[in-house]
Length: 254
Image 1 (tube, rainbow, N blue to C red):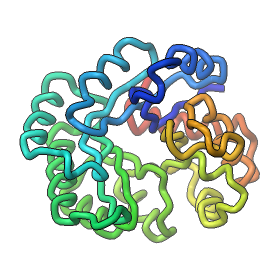
Image 2 (cartoon, one colour):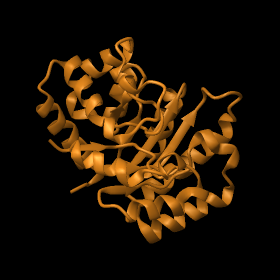
Image 3 (spheres, helix red, strand yellow):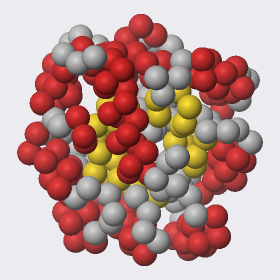
Image 4 (cartoon, rainbow, N blue to C red):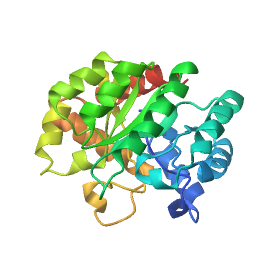
């Protein structure tokens, strides 16, 4: 069984003391490839160094919407230059987060749409973070047009999911699916087409139920797989094969 974690921040400080051990346990659990999205321009160098130093890690570059106040206009030009030189796997983590306290919506939209243009111009998929902003994200995606991507930690409506799917997107499901009280999320995971689902952890955040209150880790991805198979009433191996195929197809992974 081969698994792909489509969203994990393995480059951050939380993994600095045991990153090699975590990756060893990932391999033991069948997790052979991990996509690591960028957060701020300041962190891109460490992100790239981390991914190039370990087999199976793939970096995306982007400016995370939660940290919009830290981003500079010049970061967009820096992103353009990095993409042209180093061609990341995707543009991400980008998007809109209207859930945070007093979001600067206009500034978030500006950075999001500018990064969508970069992704479109370089024919790269995007990794999208969305909270309380699906309608605006979909509006921007339809207007600018990219080759698809993932809606990370998807928790929108079935109707919104259909719109993402029509735009060539896969929907990411992670640790929250392992909580029995995640009724809405479990219904989505059951009713959406399997061909549109991918697995993720978002480690070190959004951990699985068995490690509640602890640091999340990509090694826990099989627990997400197990929950997805259970809510769909499917065989685990079949579910693993399908979600891994979806990730490979979307990101052009071997």
